[in-house]
Length: 69
Image 1: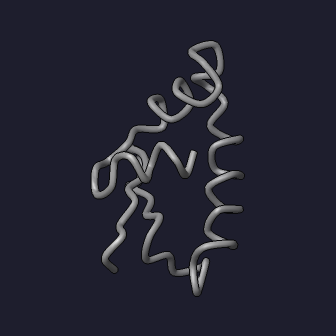
Image 2: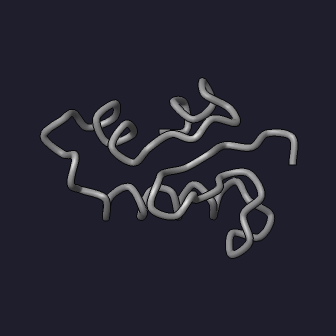
């Protein structure tokens, strides 16, 4: 997941795109997994996971990786 976001820095990546790229199209509705793994990445990468500066959620849309924050 992080690899995919790093290859698309600054761009909004939809939840469906991430799910399809990582687990395949049969998992397109498994958004719970996605939230879980994004949370784990934030715990490892963010100084304050409760206020992320790098892995941002775009509500109802997807996620965006910001490298220069």
